[in-house]
Image (spheres, rainbow, N blue to C red):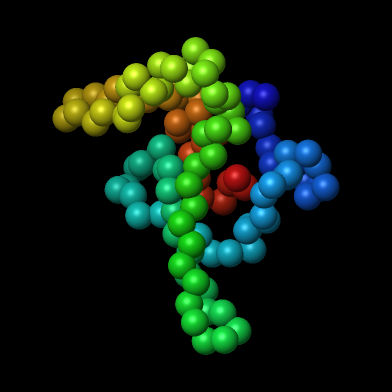
Length: 109
């Protein structure tokens, strides 16, 4: 897998195992303009019984970073992305944090 990774087209694909297809929902993130590492988003919908469901969507880093490998250990030590006035220190490589794992608009995840 790499930069050109795509969501498997068939929900019968092994990549869908243990997952639900939520692509029909309207999902939004609350991030500042220009944010490229969108790691969480929300949806709300009215249920047939009149109640509302609020869903929290979290970027699935575990699909790309397996437990106890070098990247997982480094990310665990860093703990978070640090945002400074003039730069940032990423917890994950940019390919993951700002591309493959980012919940970017109009990109299936």
